[in-house]
Length: 275
Image 1 (tube, rainbow, N blue to C red):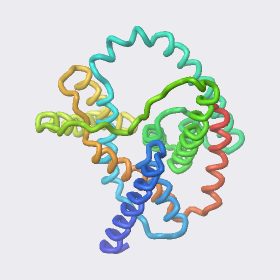
Image 2 (cartoon, rainbow, N blue to C red):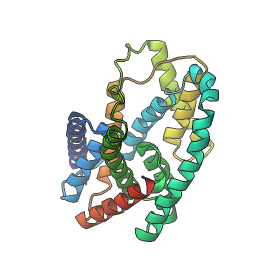
Image 3 (tube, helix red, strand yellow):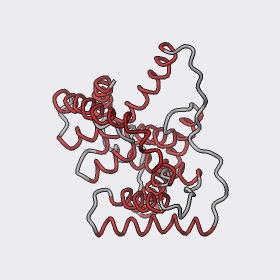
Image 4 (cartoon, rainbow, N blue to C red):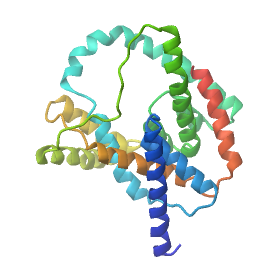
């Protein structure tokens, strides 16, 4: 592909991904910018539109998401660990049992390979499972569709079930991002350093998914240490999610619609096993 055509394909992919993310945000879907861009770009790739995205561009945005994940930690969390002991003790066997049930579905019913089935079955974050699963040799397309379907199904079912079971409960709204204060120059330098140094050290240590794990660990350390409480700007996080979703969608170029439908069907059974 000529350079000019390649740049047009990249621009088209990001445009389609951005529109999909904006639509998903308007519909109030979970992880809207990533899921919306992924679904929109997947559809574009399946119908034959020329969409491409360089892996180097994705790596930079993945590092941004790693820093963002690490910024969720704070010194106050250390003092709360004792209060979480009981719930965390129940969480461990739940994850093991539910993941084992879903793993059985993806291995026996769907016929996925071991690595793909493992990361498709784990009830973890969408971006983390895609990145680590891909780095370990799994099929990112199947993993991403499995988790996207799981999130959508759970979000559509659980709130209504909760309201039915607990009709007198009162809940508040949750927004994906708060209105963060302007990022100061020292905080920006610290966050950028977390992304760059964390990635380089993780690569030297040969850690899987170094682009997200390294920055995440570095960011968690500086936030737990109290050096900064800042996080990447909401707009940058949204753009990083669009790039991630678009990158996954571009992997479906040349894929038949039947394969996508099969992956979605398998994801439905896996989600049922988790629930």
